[in-house]
Image 1 (cartoon, rainbow, N blue to C red):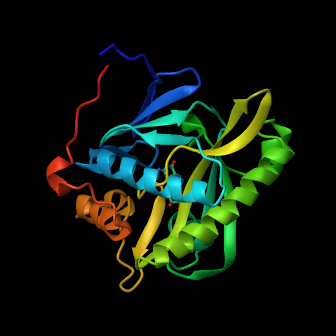
Image 2 (image 1 turned 180 degrees about the vertical axis):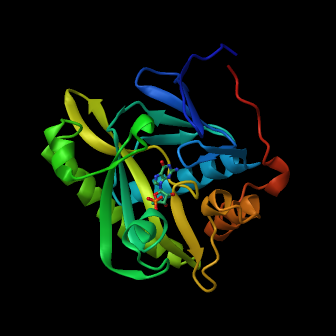
Length: 254
Ligand code: 5GP
């Protein structure tokens, strides 16, 4: 097999040139980082599970007409995606107070918010992803007012849909982070959902016990991280067939 050109390596994923123009291969690593990479570790099998979970959720979202970068899963750790120009904004939606919101505003973790709150963070590791307002986004040209309108529209629909989907399998969607990109097709540009949706960028709590089933187990050293990710996949009905035996998956080809 021909060697593929690596285009970008992030904390949890690698992007390779895709088989056709306008496509990329997104490889999911087991590496985990937190607090802007000050804490580093490995969660065995995470890449396999996040590949599957993100495939499942992006496919479901496409069914309700949310445009996404996802094309198809290629193997245990890789998916084919459309090449997009990433908008340098992390969009966070919160339904229940947790994490940085609980800390910043002194609201006890677990408090249901009066309504869902959308926040924006400027994607910049050197600056520690600072929170920004829509004013900053449009004034500095990171996205146009129309892009922001599209992003908010999609984000709120995604939140409604995923809240229901997770509740159906006994999981509370506390908060999550999305990224969007610009897709250029036939001289037209549209905003599409990019990156991934997985327990790495969602807070997922067991609906009955409030037990954490996401990356907070790694961030806060709560243990049983692999088991939590597997349980999310199991409840969604998508645990890889061979179960945890297959979790290590093939190594990245470079
Ligand atoms: P918080 O602002 O409370 O730390 O995070 C809010 C939500 O967004 C959480 O679900 C968290 O997982 C997600 N999130 C925020 N920033 C990042 C990030 O840089 N990387 C990842 N993977 N998730 C993030």
